[in-house]
Length: 405
Ligand code: AMP
Ligand code: MG
Image 1: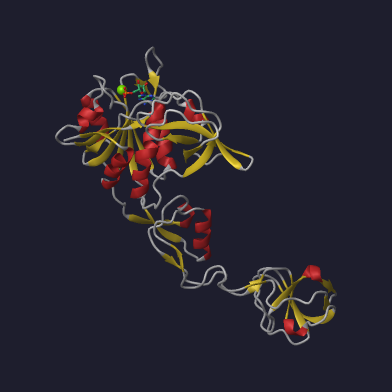
Image 2: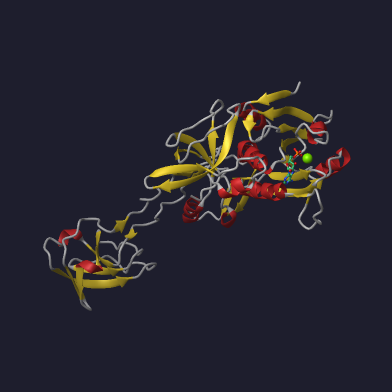
């Protein structure tokens, strides 16, 4: 029995239950941006590895400086990366550069700006605090401490920490392979002649971009005619995929064959239709034993359904912890009127800072074919079922699909 008219949560749970974490792979640290860690990382060494100077200045024994204007002889100079020539004798200071090892016999660094410098001696103008301007071994990360864990997203800072730990290779979850197929007799690809009644396949390219943005690898299978043999033949080229995404062919029309193919005995149709706007005609099941999501054809519906269902599935396969778009509340900049309120509505909005406040404005025309509403917007304004009117100045929940605001 095929379930119909699911809530978003029911639909998402069904989809997430059908996909699992992919096996890990080892990659070079330079390729790790945007991947999800598949191992726990403990510090094999202290960061920093040794006590070193945070300033260009003079390393000295703070017990010797009780008065302003104390004069010390210079024992030797110590550039960063050099090894101290020996302990600093009493009455002496070591001229030290930022990053250089703290020499034995010293416990404090006085910065150049607080001294008067001569070729063989230095006058210390300020009585320093003991341990001033020293970066201590392990003050950032202690040897043996847990640093990063399985499921952590690898961004620039995490990658920098792994480099500090001298880890050239890192274990991450594999990227899911996602087969993408557009459908429709009227749909043409880039390079095909434009004729009356044809529609360029924007979905092919938004889906390729969405898959990449989610951290997965797209395999583009082109465009299928609204005929079962063509659809089956083209899908069969994606047989090594971890997820199949189709666009179009899941509505009530006579030529909507994606759902029909999912319903064939060798495939499965787990559900059809979700109570959301846009994006009601969504079908989920399996093709060739691979989880398959039949996304609606209208471009805004395709994208909305991708963010609500395909992206969480891909992130689960990659072992990520948060699967949903980031949510934030904002003040509505103008009233929303005449919303039907029959299902949860993902309106497109423009979120911006106005003074200390986050304000959101609907992008205007909200039809499911108005792709420019996604292009102009940076978030969905989420109107729960039953919401027909929202006053200007009320707080509304937004889901961010772009961090540019
Ligand atoms: P369908 O569910 O197949 O009837 O698709 C609904 C509508 O979505 C179609 O009438 C097209 O206008 C549009 N559409 C379908 N596929 C695409 C595509 N690949 N690119 C852009 N628009 C599409
Ligand atoms: Mg169609």
